[in-house]
Every structure is written in C-alpha cells, then in structure tokens.
Image (cartoon, rainbow, N blue to C red; front, side):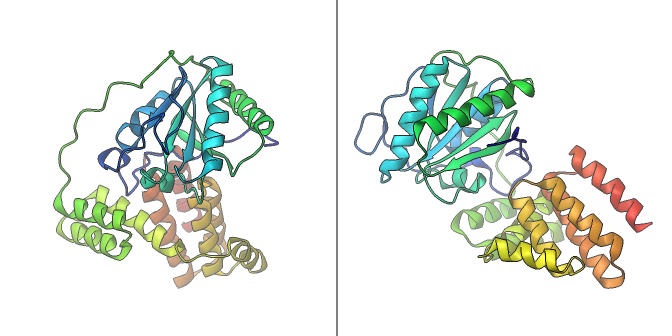
Length: 312
C-alpha cells in the first residue's frame, strides 16, 4: 500500500443479497477442531446474521474483517496474526473473523476469490487489504497504514474491550414473494431466475424501486460472471476508446471493483463522443449503474448532472 486508501461503496448500497437475512451453518466454536483460538478482547467471531452490526460499528472505529476456512491452515495463521496485532493495538480497531465457508454471502459481498483474505471497513465502506498469507511484519505495516487512513477520515474511536457489537437490528418484515424468490435464486446461483423474478415484480408494479435496483445488480453479475481475463478486457478498451462494447465491459469491472466514479466517468466520456443507437445503449447502461449505487448517492447525483449536460 503506497498511498492513502480510498473507501469503496458501502456494503449496504441496495445490493441484491441481504446479508442480515440469511442463515448458514455455524462456524466451528472457538477452541474446537476446525475452529480458531478463543477471541481476545478486541476480536469478534461474526456470521451473516450479525454482520450488519459490525458494519455499523465501523462508523466509530476501524474494523478489519478476516475471511478464513477451517480447511485452510494459512487462513487460520493469518487470523491468529491479526488477533495478536489487535491485542497489541489495545482497541484502536476491531478484528471480525468470518468463516467464509459457512458465510459465503459475506465473501461474495467482498468479492474475495480465496482465503485467507482481509478487508478493512471505514465508515461502512470496504477496502480490500490483501489475500494470501503475507508475513506478519507486512500485515503490521498494512494495519498501520489503514489506521492512518481511518484517522484522516475522522474514524478514531476506541473499541470497548470484549465488545460484542451493537444491539441486534429489529426483525424485518417478510419480503414480497417475488423479491424472496429473487433472493433465493441468487443464493442458489440461478441468476436467470433472479432476473426473471425482478422483471415480473416490475411488471406488476413499475414503481418498485427495490426490484429495479435488484434487477440492475443481477444484470451486472450476469454480464461479468464469464469474464476470465480482466487485463485483456482493459487492453481492448484502451486500444479502442470508442468501442462501446469494450468500454462497457471495463465500466462493469470498475463497478464490481468499487471504482464507482471511474465507471461513471468512462461511460460519460463515451456518451460525449457517440451518437444514435450507440449513445442510447451507453446511456441505458449508465442509468443501470446508477440504480446499483442508489439515486441518493452524491456520486450518482453528480453523474446525472454530467449526463444531462452531455446529452443536451
């Protein structure tokens, strides 16, 4: 990490998967076979049901999430190293340990490709730190840098010793049937079925903003699931700056990677130099990305103004 990290979009930006509403097999208890050591004062074991509390606590202090699996000795070693560093720092940050195998929806939310992986939460926004098993001294350096970033962003509260997070969120009302069907389909990996459920929800109620946002996110997942060579995609876009298809692929990649403003800027630049059907295709894609982030987000508000200027 050579420069001050920039937070990525909030985890709760109207995503298609509600982390707090899902249940998974419990993580092996601390101290049991396949489990980690018992948590210290600044460490918490987290599952999907309690993850929203961890995100909320990152408004007050830095949270570092480590994704591990019982079959991965490397991930257990990294989790132990981070636990020791959290003890050293005496409440400057909270370590949240997540069994990625028991809670795959959290790993998917962070776009983690393997374990071990570590992600920081700053004010509710994720910042990927590393994957794999770096030396403990390297991890120390990464933590020190992200602590500096947290302080620079006004997030410098202390974790209460043994903190077990905030009060649980109130129970949420049941989802409408089509929304529940979409969530279930996403869980099972059937993106086409999820898309169909959201489309039907919009047919029945064209003003269903929740379905529109879900449909946009599922569309992004469908478009990018078979992308195997991101470097080649970026090179193709660099070689053909007016190629609509190539530029939209990279905009989707940027969105998945949390580079929201880059995705918006790329499509806005393309709109300015395109016309006719090409311009309309790019405009529709840009509006879809707005739905994923949320129309009340400041970046969307600014991009909408830029879109209106580019079109008229």
